[in-house]
Image 1 (spheres, rainbow, N blue to C red):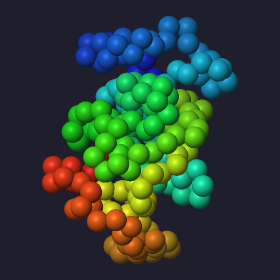
Image 2: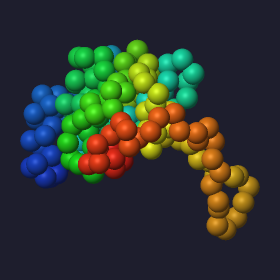
Image 3: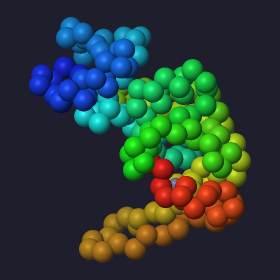
Image 4: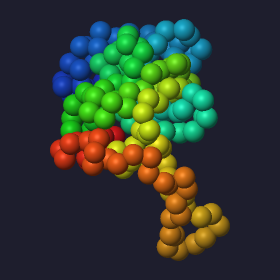
Length: 174
Ligand SMILES: [Zn+2]
């Protein structure tokens, strides 16, 4: 369901989208969104799009998080990654406490513009608040039924999160 054109959604969302100054007209078509050159992000009911950050050099997925309109705009303006924390309900700049800033080399949107892919140069030793380069350091073995035990993959810590993040900063940022 397209939140932008859905009638009767709540006023708060309407306000948030209006603040974004990018409320597509009712005539915005699927063709415009999929084939056009206008950035028409399809924010969900909470005003967010999913954002995946990959390492521009290795191609590895570093993290998945969310952007609201302001985070997306600031990322595009500054060339550094900004996100919106669902748990903290606030805008945050990647690296604001750790120094592990993400310099964005390319920002893409997917076909229906509800997800963003940023290829980044990850400054510092890692992107994950657990002290690892990537948030994706565990794998589920395939071909099993029933309960599954995860296995570590590239799980060595590249930095000490206790030395980098303050106590209040240590919960997941996604
Ligand atoms: Zn993480």
